[in-house]
Image 1 (cartoon, helix red, strand yellow):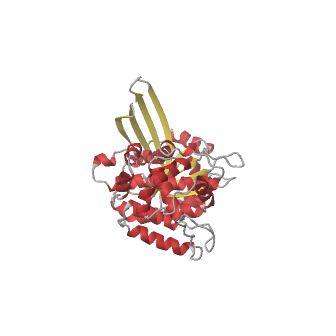
Image 2 (cartoon, rainbow, N blue to C red):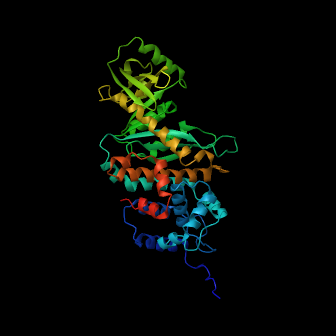
Length: 412
C-alpha cells in the first residue's frame, strides 16, 4: 500500500516558490511569451500564509495561474474554475503546476480574501512594465491615458455602497496600467491624484471625466509633464454654464467636421469648434497655464428609423489650440468605457458577488490581467483579421481545448 509522503514543513515557502518558478520556466516555456509573463506575475505576489510551518499543499502562484487561465477560458465562479482545473489536471501537472491536485473552493476563497489587494494591484503595474518597451515600439502616436472609475456592483460594503476602482487605461495598447480603490467614505476626486502619482505622465495626454476637473488634479498632471483633456459637466455649475455663456460672445479659432460615418446602425457627423480658453474662463489663474476649450457637436441619424438626434459637449485641455486634430482625442476617452463593458459582459464582473472590498479588488486585478492577455495577443499578431477579432470570439476558440489555450499563451 502506497503511503502519502508528508508535506515538507522545514523549508520556507519562499525557497520552494523560487525553485518552483524556476522549474516552470524551464519547462519549454518561451521567455517573453504571454504565459511567461503570467507566471512571473503569479510568482511576484507575496504569500500571506505562514512561511516557516504549517501544511502548505498548494503553491500560491499555482492557484493564481489556475484562476487566470480559468477566467481566460470564460469560467466565472470558483466552482467552474475548479472544474476546469480537474478536467485538465494531468495537463497542468505536465506544465509543473498543481502537482498536489486541485485546490478546493474554500481554499480559493481564502486565497482571494488573504492576498493583500494593494500589493497585488501594484504587481499589475510590474506586469505592464515588463511589456512596456515592446508595446511602445508598436505605438507611433502620442500616448493617451484614460482615467475613469467603475463601481463593482457585485459587492456591497458596510455603508451600502459598491467599491469604486479608478483605473488608468492605456488607449494605445488596450491595457490597464494602474488602479486605485476609492476609500470607503471617499470618492474619485481623492483617488485620482493617488493614481496619477503612480504612473509616468511625461509627454502623455490624460483624458478624464468631469469629476477630475479639480485644481489639485490639474496641478499634478502639469507637474509630471503631462497634458490633459477633461469634460465639463454640470457637477461644476458655475464653470460649465459660465463657459457656455461666454462661448456665445466668441468666434472659434477654427472648426472642422468629421463624417458622415456609418457605424453601429447609425450615421454620425461630428463637428469640433476650438476656442482659446484663457479668453473664456473667468478664473484662468486658478488652472496654472494654457487652456483650450473644445466644443463637440454630434448629429446622429438612426439608419433603421431615420430619427435625428443631436448632442453637444464641452472639453477643457492644456494642449495648444494649434494641435493637429485636437478634437480627435475626444472619442479616445470612450475606450475606457469599452474596457469596463468587457469586464461586465465578457468576464461578468458585476454578477460575481464578493462579501468585502479586498476579494473584490483581487478579482478585479485578475480580470484586468485577463483583458491584458487578449490585448497583448492581438498587438503581437501581424494579420489584420487577427487584430480585429473580438474578445468573445477568442475566448470561445481557446476554451475548446487546453492545447489551444497553451498555443494562444505561447504567442511571443
